[in-house]
Image 1 (cartoon, rainbow, N blue to C red):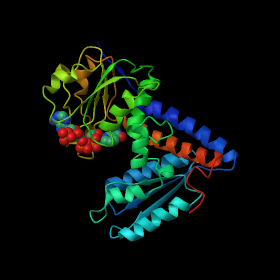
Image 2: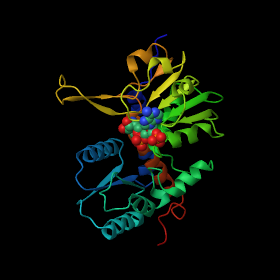
Image 3: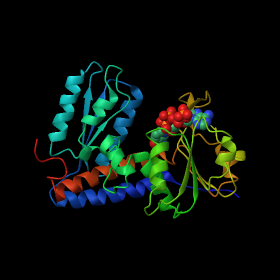
Length: 304
Ligand code: NAP
């Protein structure tokens, strides 16, 4: 069997068009969805991500306001900036670009964002709401994007055995949570594997859906995949390659060419999960703006 490719780039394009339509409707009702990305310091990769997010916002008709701050920004200055954005009626989503410089406590900074504007879905209130099955919780973009990919290829995880490899708070754990919920496009039986899992290859072979998010190039080999599995590769790894102009290429966590011969569906890297992340972030921002337009007093913008 040669797997069909899950074209994340095309699917993310569809979502971004839908987001643009929703944004246009909101603008017609007097609310232009606004996203603010706060970037502290001058990490080159973070700058690239912020530019990509800003451009995607603009293309979808959203208002994008970058807040670049110097690396030596103090805790008080940064918290003050977040408070201003929390109170700003033009901003419906706030994203703190990670990593932050070492002198800033990431947990404290992230918790300062009002949960109603936490379109990244990392605030403990949103995490808690998501885990308790509250559909109003903002879900983190990458795991929500994985569920959306399954929906758009019409592959329902209900009743399926999903094996997730990797248990980070930004991908593995939330995607395991989302797909095991008693909700449409979920209802799966989920195994969450990690570096201490015994007989990982055997566990992986149980996966009718295999989601790999560990950050190790070509880790998942064909012998770890059962025939006909749907394979979702979240990994983005830079591998030295002097034959390319940049001197490196991007590889996923899956040995793509070999696994492709066993799977029924597979995401490529790049062009699979990656493009979904920004699309889902824009989607969350429009959702936040819609809530504000509908009921500002519950969308965290009224009052102090
Ligand atoms: P992370 O925080 O580094 O977590 C890695 C996880 O993988 C940990 O749970 C770790 O287990 C597990 N792991 C590491 N080596 C393993 C092994 N040999 N066997 C089994 N499990 C192993 O990673 P992350 O932030 O989730 O990112 C994972 C990958 O996804 C990276 O390549 C990252 O660049 C990529 N990513 C892509 C997107 C996107 O938009 N496409 C978004 C986020 C991340 P322990 O917990 O036991 O240490």
